[in-house]
Image 1: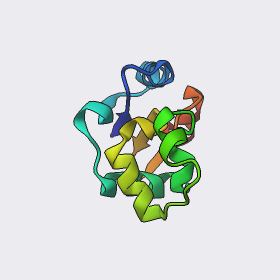
Image 2: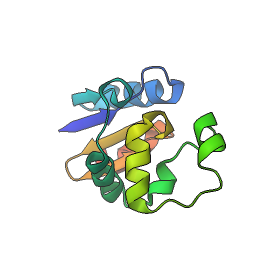
Image 3: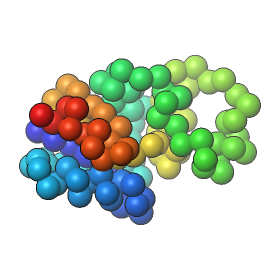
Image 4: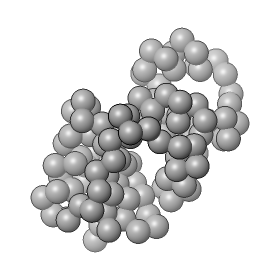
Length: 114
């Protein structure tokens, strides 16, 4: 079962979603910006990707530059920050079973979909 965490307003996210749709049936598309995303869900995604929370942060966002750039939040604080500010989350994230990957570029999705 493939899930794509997607922001419809993001060009890279749309490209990733289209790439996955071509070859794989998608069970769910999660518009986490509109629907929201819980800190626990972010933590689970990060664990499935095997990355640090900071690797999921869009550092080019104004909110990051103005409020977070010079701080060093703990992992738990990052889960809360990302939940409260979902635009900071890099996308798209593709999930297949217990594996997840940041599909930027879209071809990275192949690493968990084959």
